[in-house]
Each structure stands twice: as structure tokens, then as C-alpha cells.
Length: 133
Figure 1 (tube, rainbow, N blue to C red):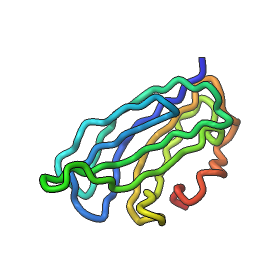
Figure 2: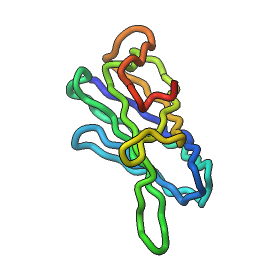
Figure 3: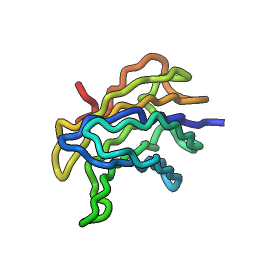
């Protein structure tokens, strides 16, 4: 069985927010708990998703902040291509969040583990602009 395990660790935001993360892989999804208002929210929550095709699927993570006036506001998002994950190794990643049409200085720390698939090593070559280089 192929699966990906993702742990949402922490974020560094441009301003304090009561934030939560929504993690999707294809039609599967999971939502983290909401944090207290902070510019450095931490979750330490792990989610597992079944993988049908590691060569084409991508994990997408979107952060939302809660506002009394505006409800849920998107703070930014990032994407991890599954075929770049090292095989059976927990890979810590720091990803820059995409906001609007550009990459922001806000970051998200996650740990991903590809179980039953992947490539040896940890090249992470195609994370593109989302990867904190």
C-alpha cells in the first residue's frame, strides 16, 4: 500500500493569526486544529493519505486565519510533488507560502514520509518556488 504521511509542524506568518491548515491530496482532505492567535502557530499534527499515483499527485497545504469580521481568510498555500519525496524517510521541509500571485516570506514547516514509493535520496528538485531555498 502506498501512502504519504505529513506532519504539519509550525508556520512563520507576517502577522499574528488564529490559523489552521487544510491538507489535500486529490479528493482526500484533512484539517488541523485551530491555533491561538500567533505569528508562529504550531500544530504538530500528522495526517496519512492513500496514494494512487506518486508520479502525478501533489500534496497541497493551505493555511487559513480566522477573523471575527471576515470569517476564514486564506493566508497562503504550498504544494509538494510526491515523486520528489525520499523513500521511507521522514523528510523535514520548510516551504514558502504562495500568496496571491507570488511567493511570500511566510513559511510552513512540515515533515513528509513516502511509504511504499518514492525515489532514493532527497533531491526535492521540483518543489519549485514553494521550496525555501
